[in-house]
Structure formats: C-alpha cells, structure tokens
Image 1 (cartoon, rainbow, N blue to C red):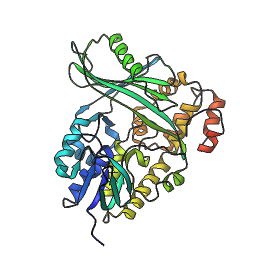
Image 2 (image 1 turned 30 degrees about the vertical axis):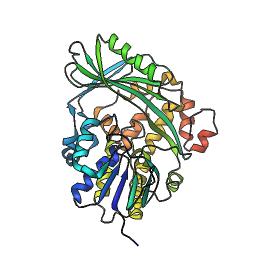
Image 3 (image 1 turned 180 degrees about the vertical axis):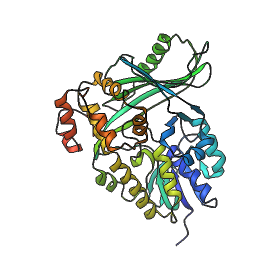
Image 4 (image 1 turned 90 degrees about the horizontal axis):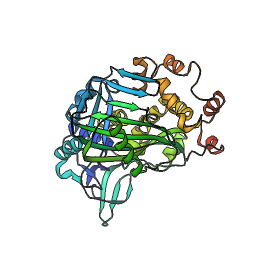
Length: 396
C-alpha cells in the first residue's frame, strides 16, 4: 500500500484544532500536518477568554503570544448586587489567532476548502479530491446528538468605537441588571481601548437560535443607557454555545465510530459557562505528548481525556438543570446573583472547573433561589430519557 499523504489532517481551523497544530509543530517540527478550513481565515470572528485560575503558569506562558488583552480585575452587576473581583482575565481575538496560525502553518493551511466526507484516516473534499492520513481529527464545532440534552447560550457581540472615552477600567463579565426576557440575559463588556468596546448581548435559552436584529438593538439600547454614543461598528461576532444538562457519554462517543474529535465536537467545554479554552489547551497538550498519532491511538487518547472531563463535570450538569429546569426563565438571574455572593476563591475554582466537596456543599446550602420542589425534580432529571419524559421542553 502507498504511504498516506499526511501524518495528521485537522479538519476545521477553530480554537481546539489551532492549539493542537501549534503544540504539535512545536513538539514535532517535521510532522506532515495539514489543516483544512472552510472559510478564508482560521478562527472565524470570535473572542476566547479565560480567567487566570483556569490555566497553569506554564500554560499562561505558552499562550502569551496569542493573548490580545489582559485585565487585573473584572466586574459583575445584578439587580441587587454589584461586585468587583480581583481575579485576572484575558482574551484572545480571532485576528491574532489567525495571524499566528498562518505564520506557523504556511502552506500547510488550506483555506476556502470544503469537506464532503471524512473518516479516521482520510478526507474527501467537495471537489472530489481524496486526502489520506495516518489520522484525521474532526474539529468542525458541535454536532447534533440524541445522547445529549442541552440548553444554549446565544450571543451577539459588536466591537464598537465611541465618540469619547468610555471610562471602563475592567471588563464587565455579567451585567444582568438589564431587562430579563425568555431566559437569563446579561451583557458582557470588554474595554479594548480608551474609546472601543466589545459589547455582547447574551441569553441562556432553551432553543439554539440567535435573533440578530433583536440583540443588535439591545446593544444600541445598552450603550445609550450607559451614556455611550456608538459612532462605528468595527466587527460583529455571534454564536450559540451548548450548555450540557444531561447525557449518555458512552452512547455519544459510540456515535463517533472511531473518528477522533476535538473542541465542541468532542463535548470539551465548561458545561455551565461555555468557556472552551482550558479544555482545548489541555487536549492539545495531551495529543502533543503522544508517541503514536495513528487514528486508533488518537481516538483512545481523546476519548480518555473527554471521559475524565465528563466525570469531573457531573456537578456542573446538576447546576445547569437547576438553572434551566427549575423556576421561570425570566427569574434565572436570581441563581447567578446568589452565586456571585460567594467567596472569590470559590468563584475562581468554579470557572476553572475544580470545585472541592466543601465548595459544592456551599453553593447549595441555604434557601435556593428557585422553588424547592422544582429544584429537587431537576436533581432527579439526570438523563436525556428522564428529561424527555417531562414537559420541560428542552431539546435533546
């Protein structure tokens, strides 16, 4: 048999596959690697953010060339609580991500390339060309699965220039003082320069839909209410992030049929916040340490990594069910307001996904901000089958 064309093909140029590529090229410069991206540049229009406590010191150092902005503090705002937290926060912008990836990959990055079909060891392009590899990783974003029950975080963000300085020193990660509608709503604001902001309108909702015109208008209203006059929109980004309520992990991965996956397609994200960078970083390091990059070895390693994450995230899925299934959608903000009254170290561990037993107990101790009976029912609804048997209406 002829030798394959490549050692590894990465299908999709998003965050997870991009970090895998950069780590592998650092560890194995001679690797015959190819990335296929359907758009004109990798990374799309995205902002990936993380807290200082999400990563190790070594991971922070490695990611430093990709980071566009850092802040020492961040703020949250609720109807009955406003708080400035001291934890550091950082963002990677897709334009910087694309530039670094393009420089590192060179002609090993094929853009405007559409994939018709793929298998663990080959990719068929829409033009009929077939590429063979020792392994193929599918990183094209989340795929529908009957084995996961999801809520959704729908958002639209606009990077805007104002007519004068905005006066913000730190990001506002959640401003939930805005009117609540069909689910938990908050505005996310990143100060990028003296007169530019990223303003993002975000909703935790039951359906994977973005009403772009409505969210666009919300941002105009929010800016006006803050006394900011928008003179230009520099770019926009929008999306729907999955929020996991319950699932059958084994069945989900059986559906992959041996196909290595990455990122959201592998279910690798914080199940409550939707943040995916820490998991993407961890998976990239895991793959870079492998001695064998054949499809079977990759699938086994990624499956094992995902299984560890799934076990660790069970408590977060419970909290998600309480958020989505207990109480009225327009009252979901009360859950988050109560959470942000807890200690800063606990909040930091929550975002990092490393809660202690004491943390888990502390989060649930006291009068719940949702009806007790519905909260207890949400605890019991720990599988897609149980949720589907109720009238809650969350889509699997």
